Image (cartoon, rainbow over all chains, first blue to last red; front, side):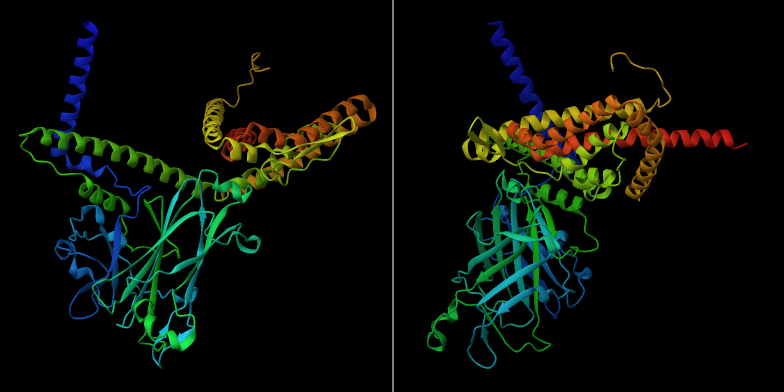
Length: 471
Length: 99
């Protein structure tokens, strides 16, 4: 009976805390601001459109639904002429075909750079003097992106043209023929994956379905890396280098040209100055971090924090202030749990970004740190010098050498001991991953703890006491 | 900049170590040949360890991150304390020499 009372009292306390948090969240909006909306491991929940302010009328192309909030929230005065803005809509807010479009400063994209140099189109068929059908396209990234384990990548290639001639029909089904992933960079670059078979890749196309002469089209490629993806690089970094598409074009010359009007992308072949194609390309890593593949900023006033705050507030479910039914209570509980979840995700993201920032600023190439410091350290051989230099040379080589199978002979029988990691991965992948996580955690903890102790000892560098226990 | 400072500092240390250890090494090689053999055997031990350690690491399935962390750790304890110590000695000399 006493035990039962304790359980009931604990449940009451938990429920009370939840209610308190729920009501606090109503009165302290900044609490919401600390919570980030993340797109991790989900389909990209927004679509992109183009806001054209170059004419006398501001128009929007490339998005489904109605966008009731956009023109109320957008600061029209800040939009200069001849600028096109990509902006997003969070499809989680969509009800049937109607979506609320948020004026999202993060995805405003200035179009002052022409990136077509790296976008190669192939024009195999020409219908007339002014229309050409695109057969394939490929894009070689000017800025290679390092791919890591267990991550979700979303790459969007958006093609925009300032005239009405571009068309991207919804029946179009381009075939992703190449997703070049390489190890190493520059002259040491070599391809390891030339097809998409080794990755879980899906690609989607989006265009303005209601406009037969759309200005704008996009192809989104998404793929996931598994927990052992980096091992493909054999201790070298793995990069995404290019994308290649084949567009579903007629295969047999002019006779088949008549039907593919509905399923090809076409645009004028006359590349005069007034026909101008722009492409926009960015990567969403793990759904939450945005990059431009060409290093372009999203805008000078880019403020990730405010974007997160706005987005978080929008993502938290709204509940009635008057609690009249159980569903209202449930709504508040759900709201609080959503906030807590987002709060922890935000903390996690903060530390992830902080760690990345520190690593990039202090040690641009951390894996070469040991080599760099010790590469000039060479003492003359013999005597005491050998004893000093050998451990340092060992550390210097530690990072550059990988496992090699060991060959032994047991009597007359030759034995080769293979490297075990590949066997572990193939036989006990999940258990091995857990084991690696635990051992890595323990080793990192030990190293960090001891580094902290070393720093602590540095506070008294003149202390000449010999510690017997240390000996 | 910090990297260059460290590298320069280590080059000085290497040169100093070579200068200081040269007579000691000469003494050991000429006067205590057995001790020299013992020291060389330590070097050989490291060579053997270097040959098999990577296979052993692979056997234990340590992640690249863990190996990196070990390298960081040893790099840290072999560089930072010495650097801090030398900087503090330099400051101390500066205080002694300045009127």
